[in-house]
Length: 486
Ligand code: NAD
Image 1: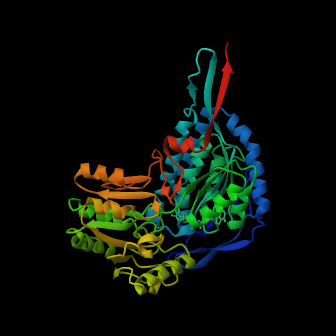
Image 2: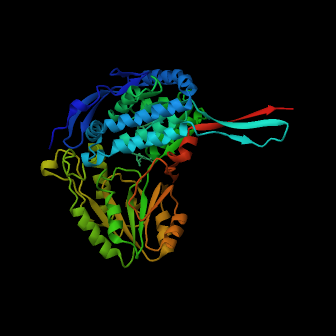
Image 3: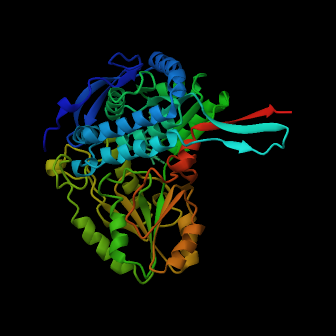
């Protein structure tokens, strides 16, 4: 196992008012490299004091940032995107140390993240309001105003993309931000904020307070935070909503998923199997949109399973810093224990038939948190395996008889983030896409989330959108101005 290049890591996990700091009142947590189980750094975390300081800096910077010419804001966002691309190798290495995403995969993250800045820069001087018809005696117009300080709570997975997906529209709309990454991902966000400063972003516009639940709750309750954005699990989202309710603060939510992949009998089974493979390779199942419930039309099922098993057997699992590695470990010892316990429960309770994997890898990978690609077939539709987000390399397979049954099974989930349809008959594919309860539907893959797409969920996958015109609207609010001209 290659020793990770720890000298790449930024020195501190906090950045407030343009200055990084290693002085946190929220305790110290060890960050562990998941591929070998060894501590990379002891990280001082933000507490109440640092959150207060960050919000105050963001508030101060708001007038400067919102007062800039929109084209100047756009220019800075472009420069941030350019800086991310220039630093792609460094950012990939930091990402791989932070969450053990294989370098072959994280190598593309900076360019994807940069695209969020390039796309949203275009909106900075185009997100106009509208004239409102008011008769000849009045002039009525609605302007789109930024909220002010956005408190953005982010998860650890694919942190480089997750952070930029939020920062870009928030900044393009003229807001400032206090970003709270979790202790599992203490490096990427700070490095992005440093690069943004170097690219010309005024100090205080982006602040980073890496910390745990205490910092997150304080940010949500802070009276100077005008809107909260939360990306994470539905369990934490409920707490966030309850805290926000105390001061009636608006919240947008990007939450988990248990996304269906529906494969009709006339589909290209290899293309569909490769889509299913994305639930294992790359992020090791730790992605919110990944297709974790695979629904295959009876008749194609045996062939599909054979193809998928063949693909999974060939997945290169190993050292995240090896170019050939396609799948790394789970992010932490706790995540590994949680995934193994979900597998054990599924076997004990006969939730499905285990046809592949189901164990932790040992030998040269034994110090890391590696779990073998795991497949269950004939999964009970009401079982925990079918209903809970496992966030690991575990796929559940189901069969369906006809289109109506496929739609019913796909929608039988409390989540509604994403869905995937594979069918040669495009009339059917469109019909099914219309009937699926999901924020995004992809037909016949391969799949990419682009900054131009209004990305978000329905049901317990949350509400609000990141991306597209909707992503800008998420971080502005209309103000109506009526003027008498009699
Ligand atoms: P999590 O809910 O445990 O944590 C999310 C964030 O909330 C972290 O920053 C955490 O420190 C913070 N937090 C914890 N307790 C808090 C509290 N009481 N108040 C305020 N903040 C608090 O989620 P996670 O394990 O970091 O991430 C995995 C989850 O995120 C999965 O459910 C995944 O599907 C989801 N996710 C969704 C998207 C999306 O765009 N829809 C993207 C990535 C991840």
